[in-house]
Image 1 (tube, rainbow over the protein chains, first blue to last red):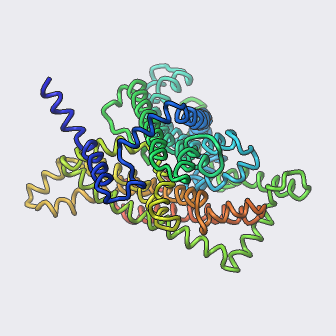
Image 2 (cartoon, rainbow over the protein chains, first blue to last red):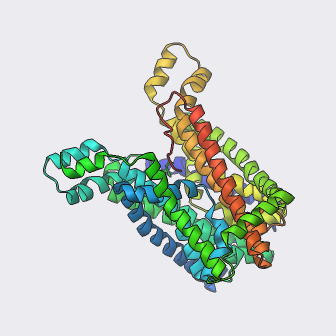
Length: 259
Length: 268
């Protein structure tokens, strides 16, 4: 019992340490209190924004947009990646689009998307879809391609049909790489939803944060930042949890946004 | 061998692959150009030939280069600072347990948070100039380089370290001759993710609040309905993003020459 507490302290001590440094900087006035409000003020702002429902309203809108674009990208990206890995025609048709388009910041297309899909949610969802599509497709493709041939041959030798090879060998073999792509895409979906809401919108957490800091209410802005942080952290943990359940045989392996 | 397996064994020729790869982009471009000429599309879809002409004109007048230079300074400034910090701290955390233990909870808590959220607050601190943008890019680049350097240094085969020590190498020598080369592929992978992020964040910052740079050019061109100008800026962003990535891949090939990793054509 005591050792468990000690271990938790040993693991998590840096977090209160950083928060304490923040509080000291704010209280002593080393950094202007207006720019770096004390944690008490930020907590009060979070409480107030929760009470009047602002925070939940804007968070719900941002979350809905991010989730819609991300889900679309998962469906299209995995299908496309698998098709490219299985068919030479698809590979030859789409590979250049992905290898040339990958390093290009698609966010630059946002104004075009506004004209095409309007100022509302649709343009944001489509841009999230486009930005997330790249890492998911590319990782699904390399995952399928990277499956050990010996495993495929062994399955075929033991009389597996092509369908069985696909569902029982290729897809499980590609799953770790597919999840790595999902983990790269997750923060990207949040970046895109926040920045598009900051540029032109009157709803969502991006708008909430930029509006609060434009009106010099920094504690409220930090409350918005805290909400984004909680959402990002929770979604990432959920993804890690899901990944460890689905591909339980890889549980010990490092799970990072691989290149 | 079954017929299906035989079919799988014969790869497409290089020429046919290239030709097939050009099909979709060319078809899209031609359809776009034709429909823009006939006037069947909304005005924001400017004909590619017009975009090309405008880009050329702005290149000649030097206006495009001016914005590009400002944007590059911000993206690469933040990239250099964030990348250097990320690699240094990441490698250190990879070889020293207490350092890793210190960073682990902070990084795992803040890693999934999009760093762009602090931009409005940083603008209040540092002003709307270059500093606030460089700071956001720095924060965004730090995470992937840190995490990849950490895993790279941690993943070094213990046996190599032990044998080097056994043969009398000091800690510095072990680091320089064993750990650094072994971690390099992973460090470079982090740098590649970081570069893509640096450009995304740069454009995002400039679109949100700026008086210069390519992101700013896109927004002002859009506001004044100069769509050809907007596309010229988009083309410039695409080119620097792509060129930066290729440059990094080339560096990686040189740095990893002799190592059996870093295959060409591997995507992000």
